[in-house]
Length: 306
Length: 228
Image (cartoon, each protein chain N blue to C red):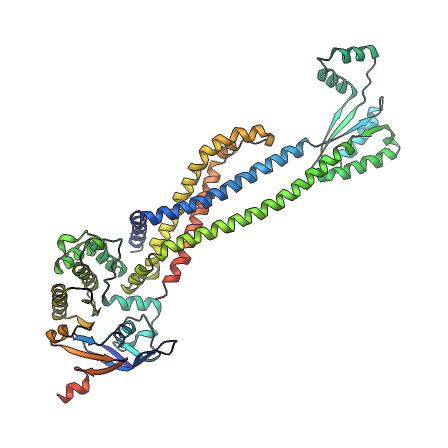
C-alpha cells in the first residue's frame, strides 16, 4: 500500500503540473528568475574572489642590498624572513640574475646596453622579492626589515620599495574589506527577496486549490495524501526552474567568459561554469527543490485546517 | 446511528446558528431537513461532518462523540459518510472518472478495486459515456451525478446531501432525487437539506423543519411518532 500511495502521489503531482499549465508556467518563471539571480550572485562572487586573488598575487615588496654585500649575510636575512609566519614566498635574485634580467628587459635599447658594457662591472645589487600571505601583512614584514637594517647584519640593506607600494596596498586592503562586506549584504538582500517572491507565488498557486483541498478533506483524504501531490508539484517547479536557469546562463556565460578573462580577473567565467557544472547543477536544482518544497508545504498547511 | 444531543453553535459575533438541537437519525432512514436560508441547515451538516465544533452539546455516531476524535480518526469517519453539495465541489482538474477514483484512493483502495468499481458506479448514475469528461464539460445535473457517484463509491453508511438540487432545473432535480431514493432503498441512510418543499412532499419521508437555529417540527422525532 505504501508504494501504491507514493506512486499515486507522484502521478497526481505530474498530472496536476501538466493540467494547470498556466499556474505551473507562472511559478516556474518566477522561480527561474529567482534562481538566475542567486546563481549570478554566486558566479559574481567567484569572479570577485578570483580578481582579488590575482591582484593580491601581483602585490609584493622588494628589498635591495648594497652592491657587493656578502652572500652569507644575505642568506641569514633570507632565512629569518622565511621564518616569519606572514611570509609566503621569498625569491632571491643575485646581482648576476639582476643583470641578466636587466639586459633582457632592455634588449632593444642599444644605448643603455652600450653604457652598461662601458661600465665594465655589474652595477646591480642582489635583491629579495617578498610575497606575504595577505596584503595587510606587509607592514609587519617591512617593520622586521627596518629593524634588521638598524642591526649589525642589516647594514647591507640598501632600500625597501615598500613606501612606493604602500598606497596601492592600502587601497587594495580597503577594497577587499569593503567589497566582502558589501557583497554579503547584497547577497543576503537578494536571497531574502528571491525567497519571499517564490514563496508568495507558490502560495498563490496553491490558493487556487484551497477549495479542492477542502473537498479532499471532506472525502476523507489524509493530510499526507492531500499534501503529497502539492509537494511533488513543488519539487517539479524546482527541478524545471533549475534546469531552465542553467540553460539560460549557459549561452550568457559563453558570451561573457572571454570578456571576464580579458578584463584581468584571472578567471574565464565560462570555463569556471563548465568546470563546476556538476556542482552548480546540484546547488541550483537543489535550491529550487528546497524552495518549492518548503513553499508548498507551508502553503498547503494553511488550507488543511478543516 | 447518528445522534445530535442538545447541540448549540454560537459564532464569535454572538450570532446563533444552532440552538439546543436534538435529533436522532436511525439506520436506513431518509431524512429531509427544510427551512429558510440561515435557519441552520448547513451548520447542522457541518456538525455531522466534523467540519465545525459545537459550542455546547455533542454529536454521536454509533455512540462515539465525533468531536473527540483525533485527526486520523476523523478521516476514517468521513470515509463512512458520502457528501453531496449544492455547488457539486468536484475537483476541476480531474475527469469524472478521476473524481470518483480519488475518493477510493483516499480510502486506501487497491488499483484493481478502483478499476472495477468506478465505471460501475458511473453507469449507475447514467454517466458511463461521459466518464472521461472534465467537470467544465458537464451540465449541472451531470456534475451532481458525478458527485453522487463519488459519495456512494465507498459504500458509506450515510449520505449527506446539502441542497443537492439547489442549482438544478426541475427535470434534473427529479432525477437526482430518484437516484437518492434508489440509494436509500438499497440501505444507505440519507440526510438531505432543501428549501424545495415540493421535493419533500413528493418523497413522503421524515421531515425536520428548522427555524432560527431550532428544530420547529420533526415528523420522525420519538415523541411525534409516539403521539401518532
